[in-house]
Image (cartoon, rainbow, N blue to C red; front, side, top):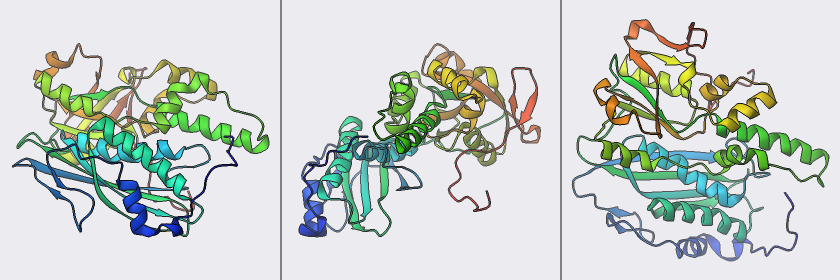
Length: 351
């Protein structure tokens, strides 16, 4: 949290919008054969040769989705791409291109935007996607980022939220709750810093949690894994708003119910230890925390032998008939109705 007071600062007005676009775009190389024309014309030209195209868009707004007092701009650029790629992988598709649009206020010099795009470029390189366009404009209220991700999926291999059937297994990737706890740790250290700017945070014991918040990873590997295992989920969704919200999305779209078992929810040991430190319930965090960017899916029971030994996949429950409702089965074997208490984009001022 120590700021270098001697940083070079180039006013964006010196280079203009098109100069900025040329400056940022020069470091991005085309990697996908489906990219015929990228940045530099009125629109990108893509050729998927018969595959189905999938598209997803997200906004990240300063003060709503991120806090630059502890979110480095390079990490923010990386995360902005991850948020969108995760939606593509949730369709059982492969991401191939992104567009990035930003609105910036005059408090951001060129060097700050370069940091943001360095994170975007790192994400593009690691995940093998092309930056093929976007827009830049001015803002009177800080930084706004909009990323659109484009991908493709073989015919009849796409997976929707609407295909779950009674007796299907409820399966999740990775572990849950760490990103939310990472945010709580960062918010706590921010308040400490306000009181004593000389006090530098010691985050060693929270490394995994902070990384899950500041530098999440989209589960590209799961799409490949499912193909290798010859498993096509009956439904799938990414976990951005909390496990309970995502399960209810699947239940609503598929017109089914579910039983989710508290004892089966995967938690990292650092999550359990930090929940004890903060005196909060780990199940509540896993259900409602959000920003894990893991994948939640349902699979046919016939496919269980194919996934049961895989450490990336955990069966956490099963799908029931719609009239049975959606429930959490607690450690005490009690059924509690699931409620969506995760992230809400538009909160009442009275909340």
